[in-house]
Amino acid sequence: MITPNKVAAMAEKKEKENYAFRTFLKNHADPEKLDAQFLRLHNELFSQYDCSSCRNCCKEFCGTFENEDITKGAAKLHMTPETFKAQYLQYDGEGAYDTNHTPCDFLQGDGSCLLGECKPVNCAEFPFTAKPDRLLSMISIIGNASVCPVLFEILERLKGEYGFEFRSNARW
Image (cartoon, rainbow, N blue to C red):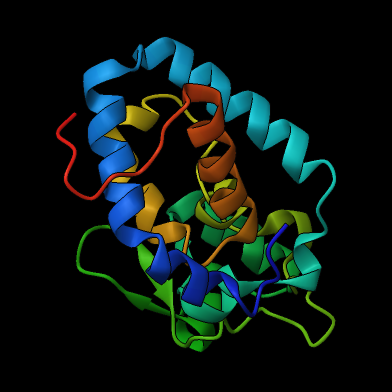
């Protein structure tokens, strides 16, 4: 698997290929089968990968907190939800809150999350490859492949499973 410090550069090199693969999938993939493939690869690869050795997602993105996430995070840190919001979060204008900084305020030096199992759903589910309707979210998947080595590998394996070969002048 690609190392965390090389995934952005490799994803950039593969960007045109990945967008061509997206077009190929839109024309050839059964959405339910594709979701099953994503889920199988997600489970297989994440079971073998220690995310704390990477944490590119925590370094690149803000954590997004819904009200339930705020309540759990505040309880974990023994503070009120109001204090938690004031210290760590800013309102995103769309009904949720984002962490104040990137890297994430909760990222610890050892790659763990200060919130542990109380981290927001948004963080726990990244890169969203275990969710349904992956065909509809291929643009964000391609973008996230520049951050997550496991997602980069999932795309590469899917290309193999579909027998996809990139040709810059092909029309799928």
